[in-house]
Image (cartoon, rainbow, N blue to C red):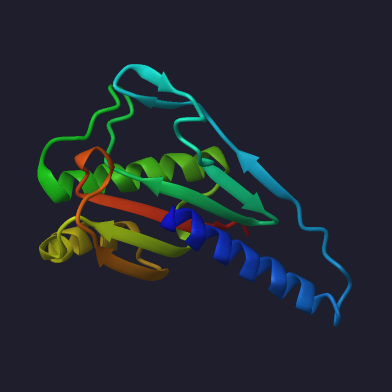
Length: 161
């Protein structure tokens, strides 16, 4: 619920900025497109009723990607190997979603990183920095637990140039 609220707040802020700027320039037609694909977990499909979120929301040239965790896309289970392996898989999953929209990691302008243990920050950061030499804006914090027992979750905002 908090994630939806944060996302909704960001989206409303963006749209209000568009509205405010429309007074000084020609109006932009901003189209919001919800991009969904089936969500799978442990060999069975979860209905969108059970997973009430969108995979990607496109607003103009901005793409808001839902959080990704270190799921192996073949068997839909968390990769073994701890924070380093999960961070790598999470970022590879993000790369795949971006590629589906003709983008890559250089299109990312903001990342939100959630760790289940702040002590993993250094190990996570070593992997993360190899994927983002352009250093997008980022927020990182730790929580008590993540879905499916994941050690990390990352969501990003990307802009298509």
